[in-house]
Amino acid sequence: MTAGRTSAIRRSLIAFSAVAFSCVQAIAEAPTRVMSLNLCTDQLAMELAAPGQLVSISFLSRDPSLSPMSGQAETYPVNHGRAEEVFLEKPDLVVTGTYSLQNTTGLLKRLGFRVEEFSFVQTIETIPGDIRRMGALLGRKPEAEALASSFEKELAGIEARQCGQRPTAIAFEQGGVAAGSGTLADSVLAAAGFRNLAAESGIVGMAPMSIELIVSQKPDVIITRAGEEDTPSLGAKVPYHPALRALQDTRIGPFVPRGTWSCGGPFVLDAVKALARLREEIAPCGALQ
Amino acid sequence: MRPVVLNAVLCLLMLALFLASLAVGPAELGISESVRGLLAGGGEAAAIIMREIRLPRALLGLGIGFTLGISGAVLQGFLRNPLAEPGIVGVSAMAAFGAVLVFYSGLAGSTLYALPAGALIGALIAVLLLLALTARSGSTLTLILAGVALSSLSAALTSLVLNLSPNPFASYEIIFWLLGSLKDRSIEHVWLALPLTLAGWLLIALSARAIDALSLGEETAASLGIDMRRARLFIVLGTALGVGAATAVAGTIGFVGLVVPHLVRPLTNRLPSRLLLPAGFAGAALLLAADVAVRLILPAGELNVGVLTALIGAPFFLWLVIRSRREVF
Image (cartoon, rainbow over all chains, first blue to last red; front, side, top):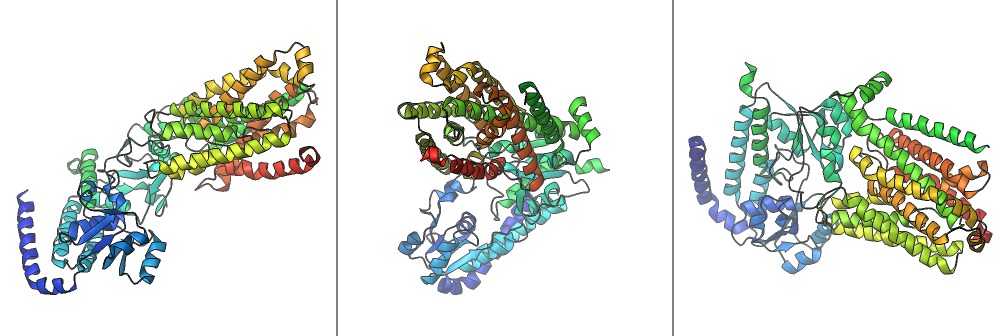
């Protein structure tokens, strides 16, 4: 607790001095009307933008099951990622994801808008870089630096508390899709001290994994998607298949707070913390001795 | 072929494919391990895989295949139309739409019981609509065109409901409802579908004498003392129950009911009632075989079984159309 407060004070001191240095320069370069078309860039932009700088965000950010910032998103106008909306708004910077809305992105570039794309291939290691890049784009480098370095520090703190006990887990999404190697979930599991069985059995990216394979590997934890109780789908029932529930030593549930690991952003830390607590509960480090 | 021999042969084929279905899956279990898992039980991985994953899947393949085969046979006899089949005349598609509408709207919470409830209503509406449409003109063309219209409309409405669902992942399930699958089903689905399909088989079996008489024409049938209203009710309810329950748990699986009666009919004495049981066995055998094949062709991603039955069935349908072109046009 005390350590956290001290680091927060130090962080704000650093941030303050950095602001003082780069203030003049930032005002000169910073875009004044920024539009974000993608759920993940929305999160970074809302965290970092100066008041009034961000003119609209994607409508998905208001969905509480996808976005941990849905409350804050209510205070911004929303867009649906259409080129016409951008054209009417006349922003001087558009931020979006690489894979989403490629047609829109291409059209906007031809129309002469400045479009900056953020890669969707994210792991926990790429997040500080993305935060710094967004900060540079928005002319908010000091704020971004403070956020990125506190992210790195907290993450290092959690990773330092790992020990030899590494229980097994599978992040099992709707419709029987598991998070394999190279995914954000894979790196979050590793940071929290879990072994990702999906990656170990050769799954790359988000790909289907059969229930039979999961049963034969008997993972300690199956992590499902949080927050879909009110909107039924058949796929949401797959992680709760009777065959998986029959595994006596396996815990199944949404152990990660809603929407915290759907995007590479500062909220991923909440996912890491929740999973690290779960790991401590399942396999306490003290039990090793 | 004598009926007893034919039934015995087809039944054995079905049972062999049932065992094959139990033996195939991504977890490589040996034969002794599978048998022990199936019979011994307990918390072992092999027991869970056999009892909770493969057994329900094989049971559903058998039950749904039987239902589709027998429904195809009874519809072809009843409507006196060689192209009649639950998939082609739009009963399956309407059943899928009914299930989708009730389940994804969240009207009944997220309980699985919403699926058969909606599917039965959809199937019933479809059968009644078809009867009304074919009451005036019994031509093959009317029935098939009505079926095409009904199928396309239900498929479009199914996609619409899934696209409008507030759950962003629901639209991925369009393919399941349009081209069914037995993947990831569980014993819950078996309990959901089995009682209803059994009731459907019973009703169809009770109307066997009526469809024989019907092959001589409606007036002759009535003069033979057949209660036509009762027979019609039994066939409508029987098909709706069977196809509705099958579609509710496995999506739309087309063409099984079309192909099977045509394959089996030459082996019978061509009385429609004698076709029912062998068509059921052969339907079960065909669906089990297709379901084994999809697991072997693409073990990782797994093809939807409805894709395979359409690949077999659609060319067969075309061939039937060409063969009976004089009658149709």
